[in-house]
Amino acid sequence: MKKNSAFIKEQYGLNVVNISAEEFDTKEKFDAITMIEFIEHLADPMAVIHKARDLLKPEGHIFINTPNVKSWSAFLSGKRWWLYKPNEHLYHFSPRTIQRLLETEGFKVLLIKKLSRKRNLLTVVDRLSNYSKISSKLIKLVISPYILKRILINLSVGGHICCGK
Image (tube, rainbow, N blue to C red; front, side, top):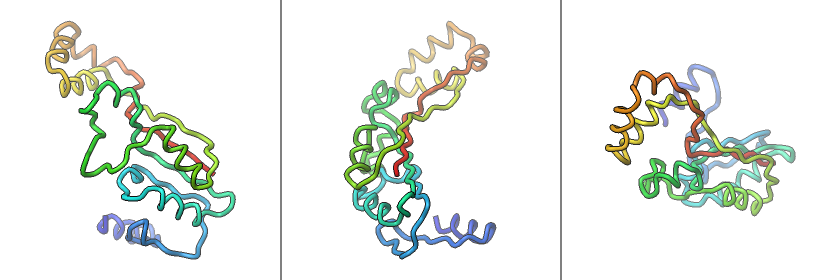
């Protein structure tokens, strides 16, 4: 993290502060605060959201990107969902819980949207092997990997983004 901060400071001349969200203290107010794949790692997400509310200008926005525990990928994967990381992700949020968290801290939720990415079917079948090697092998026997690679699908990646004001 400190190495990335030094690079950003050198390359772009930006003032980079490398401390925890809980320790961050300033009188400055901001137009926007982003929390990208961040909030699920916090010991006290409510305290950090509260602090964000205090740091925003009256018309400021907060943007949060976090895994969605109610996503299809979480449902289908069960306990083996790739975003269950017990020692790393201390909290898991659904659209409902992230909305409740923001509203409790005085935000009006403007948007909650699931994130998706285009993936070729071969990538999806290869990931399936983490859960069922037999299914993955059978699909590749029935449909050529060459064809699977050429078919693109819009796939939920298990996350969601939220915007509040």
